[in-house]
Length: 188
Image (spheres, rainbow, N blue to C red):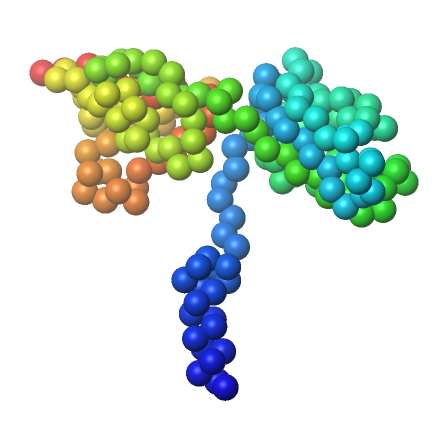
């Protein structure tokens, strides 16, 4: 019997059903993001009343039925979900609502400019790194200074030596929507 449970556990792990939940850094919701807001844990006829696709307005707000405008920009989707759930409960609208917020990723980009073969906007994905964004811009050109690549996030600039990423890919920095990557020209 013990062998049966060991085999079952290995099977579940292999199929991904028994893996521990890992938390990945989530991108922060921003003004202009289009988000899908879905309601669960309530009677079926109520789900459509709250579930909608909305764009976060210039004030960082979305309009939630029964609650009005709620500011969610600056929060990750988990915190925004929790905020709306708490407001629905504290307002005695629902007893156990579950809110799911997902960002439409086709509205989020990373900009790659400078000494790359194809400067431009790269569509953001959760696994995007500095090097994969540069690869999405067709890679470094012949004049690129790979030692002083600039990553700008929220107005802060970090200078990266991308040559180290080739030696140890785990050092490659994950990017977030709105990040800007600038590859300067090498000084000969």
